[in-house]
Length: 289
Ligand code: NAD
Image (cartoon, rainbow, N blue to C red):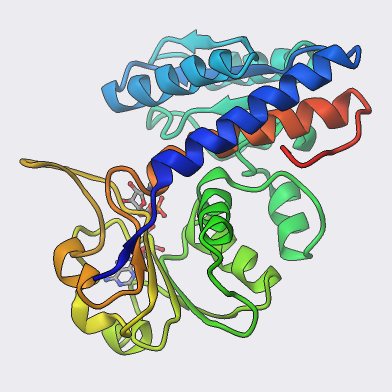
């Protein structure tokens, strides 16, 4: 059966590296990175995500510059908060927790985040840099998948990689990052004619469709590496987009849900925040970034 890719362990290692990087930054005369998480409203799932981001940023030695706005806030007030954080030198990174309430235009809010504080990698500027293969802040979930593939020595150059999903948050940047490592990348989406047939070509299969169990054993080439980005709350706890038990019989390596990609997302947010702080303070990049 497949080797288990332990995202919890890799995420812990990344966070420890970030913690050491923060210590070095401060020891070298710099200022500890400040992470401004912005939560609008009180969606329970978003509250949990933001609480974890704040807790782990503090654990890594960062300043918690969290801001909370009521769910009925108007666009201008939310925009003014982003502008205030953008101008504040203590703020290294701004993370607008998505989704924002329906009446707000989250794209317009993200557009106000300066690219060098865009630790979620969601501005058009950072998306463009990624598309051009130039340095920039990368979206956290796909960056976390790349770190897992690297930690487990999964060969990418020349490999067939299939990404299921084309969202701005996950699928598209995922495909770009795999392409940058010289994989032959295919992107599947809701109009793909025969999903299983395309997925079976993959040496590396990344599934981010947001549909529980959409990828089963019939869609997996024996020995393939399968990365499950999906997160769904079911009766028996969390599950992913992949039928874990049957796919684990076929795949060479697989991420569990929970304990796979999920913990990596926050770890990469912290890594991005350190990278942003270093760049803002004119400190050279090192390994931990
Ligand atoms: P999304 O809904 O924005 O995008 C889903 C994508 O899947 C779309 O591009 C769509 O074209 C594609 N799709 C839908 N039905 C399909 C089908 N039948 N066949 C092939 N493709 C299909 O979702 P998202 O934001 O990209 O997130 C995807 C999943 O990943 C969700 O379950 C989400 O909860 C999870 N997620 C996890 C993390 C994490 O930290 N692990 C982070 C972000 C998202």
